[in-house]
Length: 280
Image (tube, rainbow, N blue to C red; front, side):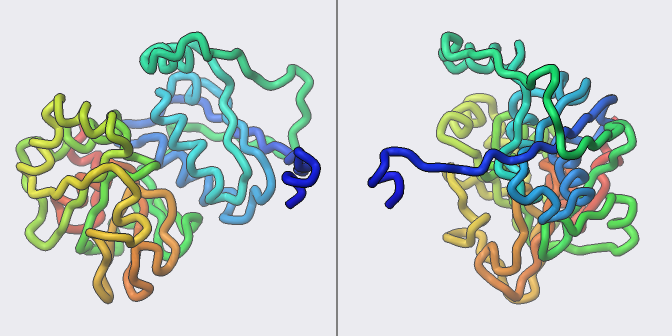
């Protein structure tokens, strides 16, 4: 109503948390693990009405797909937006989309003031898993293995981790292997473009050969709207962005969150597993 009456709206400019991430992610650790670690550290409401700004060597080396994963999930800590300075990685991505002319240099002012600064050593992060029913209920894979958590379904894809890079990571693990007989694996490319790229690149054949079902692009099981709705008491390990109670269509089911690599390997093992066992 305000927008219609005045032709403008007013918003509070959020304070910013600066997330400084330096070092190299270890084998089997991906941007999704980093973001789950950050959310676990900050808390589901720890950055409410803030902006999260990511800087550091880890971020500069990260692909656009990885950066998208970080920005996609800042809301799970309550933040309004996730900011990463534009650079040559950004320019190359826009060029690949025939949008190089849209490139704009955007970065923080040299004298920017931050409400909080958080330093993270990327090399110390393990594969991470979020437990039901909140994203900040995180544990390291070392802690998870002690619980021997069997799963009924795995979902790889959705808006958070359904890009070509994510599907390639999962396909590399699934190639030549079969999923566990007690597990349903559902793969959901993030867009029609990604679906076509995966089709042309032979990834869909790898998924189907492993025993997976490949769905059309969209939210799919993430919001419980069609194929993939969980049964009572079932457990699903998913690469989606949130695991609230009833999120996938059944409040009597449990949702765990992890990276595409952890999800793919867990589909093979039939339980939440450490993908570092097969990544050399």
